[in-house]
Length: 98
Ligand code: SF4
Picture 1 (cartoon, rainbow, N blue to C red):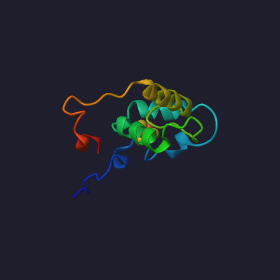
Picture 2 (cartoon, rainbow, N blue to C red; picture 1 turned 90 degrees about the vertical axis):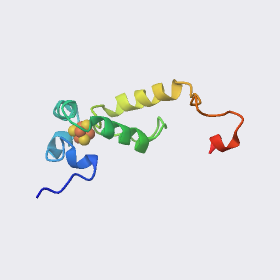
Picture 3 (cartoon, rainbow, N blue to C red; picture 1 turned 90 degrees about the horizontal axis):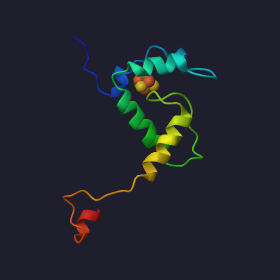
């Protein structure tokens, strides 16, 4: 019986190909793997959360199909989008701010 997958890491296309992500320089092999990875979105979301909004934050390696520079640019784009309240929130209700 096969053990069920517990996390998105278990389904990562790169889990058996770490060499594609090692060393300096362009990572064409890594990015090609990411393009067919079934958990690309989860991987990118995880990277964006872990790396945070700080442009000076150390970003390295290809994650979610994006280079560190591309993720930094994505972070800047996300921060430039105005935040909006969800339609169900009541701006007068202090409970909605929690
Ligand atoms: S998207 Fe790329 S870096 Fe992320 S888990 Fe998949 S193959 Fe690995």
